[in-house]
Image: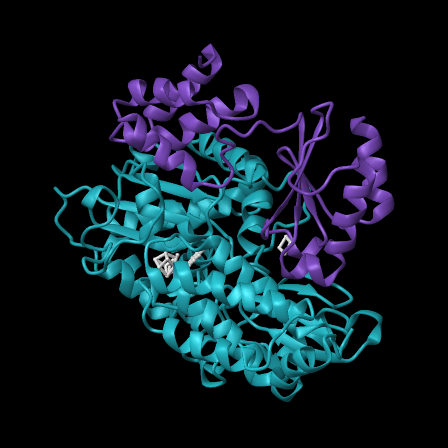
Length: 419
Length: 155
Ligand SMILES: Cc1cc2nc3c(=O)[nH]c(=O)nc-3n(C[C@H](O)[C@H](O)[C@H](O)COP(=O)(O)O)c2cc1C
Ligand code: SF4
Ligand code: FES
């Protein structure tokens, strides 16, 4: 398959604008500026592109909700907070091919009529933030950003906003709060950001990978995009593979590649040729799959049908030696650490879960602890202000559903049956 | 007192946003760059530059985990990822190894103030796990030998 998202990775100085342009970069922006903004929105709709940040919402549809009134200022925000454990694709694009993102954002901004955009990058990505600032400077010097871009009459400024350690800022309304200078806690919806977002103005928030798909959709056309992968979630997808495989890393493949194909063909199989035990298909919020599910296509709908989700496309592979109680503990500890404290079920419930998991893992589990975990899950799920709390529950329920006997074994024998 | 460099950075940040408050994260980052942590009077100074109340600056600083508010860290802040992908490939052993090598526990600073050891959640480098960050730099595909070598260079 011809790569479009990772095509420049590994090329020397791929982050410099001369090399990006020499490889055909910014031609899509030039072409887009000759089209009407509405036509671009329609092209993105027709492509079938669904957001790569987790929820899988139609990108074209999201853009079409932005009011057309030219007197209202509008914003584009790129979500580069990339914090879902197991995920490292946005960093791959930003570090190696920052102009692909800048070009995608310039086109998106033209399509929705945004004069300003922000890239919200997580604080730890200091290298990437420098790359982006340098790329924005280069693009402005070459007339791809700034005033009257390529003589089109469209002007646009792009800025980098650096986070400083808070997973919750990946949630789009928390991200907006953070840019406005507040603590990053989610806002009530409605109003949705398309009507009242950053500084109460219409705002589109898109993930890095989503925006990186835009130049190729303009250049190769919506049909090219929609003909790749499953009809209802088409296009190229970057899978981030980590854990017990021979060749972990980023893989750009057609959406709908199966778990088996990804692990055993592309990633060279299991590390040390051990048996596979479980796979988390979409970042730690996604319930795990087991060996029964190896032929599941990794796309939004197929994974939803299995009770899991594609999420951020982070595929975490675990072999037979993995202790599932420990994995559940690590995942849950993460969520309780990252709980923003706004609502009680998540703020108080997730640390409670962590404590129980800790004692089970440490050999001090009590009879009834599994049932206690389950009842706590029932009391948290569906009662939280934002999806973080639900994600914590879904992950834990996935582990309990598939490996309940391992949890009970830990309690009965005060040790692990796997490792 | 903020350094001149920090004040310049805050000026530059103010140009990015339509309101002054939005610059608070960049301002705190600039303050932290000066001495590795943020002191109370830095926050007061930032509040006056950004026309905010001190409690608002404080609230932001306390919320984001990378700000070291009143928490001095060593010259080298070593942050080892303890999340899932790194853990699957032995992060726990590496953390123990690091504690032995530095003769401190996680969360502590060496008496000579050179090293602080912390554990952190996923740093977005899971394909090259296990990994850690020393100040701004990522170190990936770690082994005990690689850690020993790195520490020696920082000595
Ligand atoms: C707790 C939480 C964390 C999230 N983290 C991210 C993130 O790091 N990056 C991201 O793009 N989307 C993240 N999202 C999803 C965003 O809220 C939003 O749906 C997404 O950025 C929209 O972009 P897209 O339509 O291009 O996918 C997160 C959502 C939640 C609830
Ligand atoms: S669910 Fe958790 S992260 Fe979300 S608003 Fe409630 S406390 Fe905050
Ligand atoms: S789990 Fe360690 S970097 Fe992601």
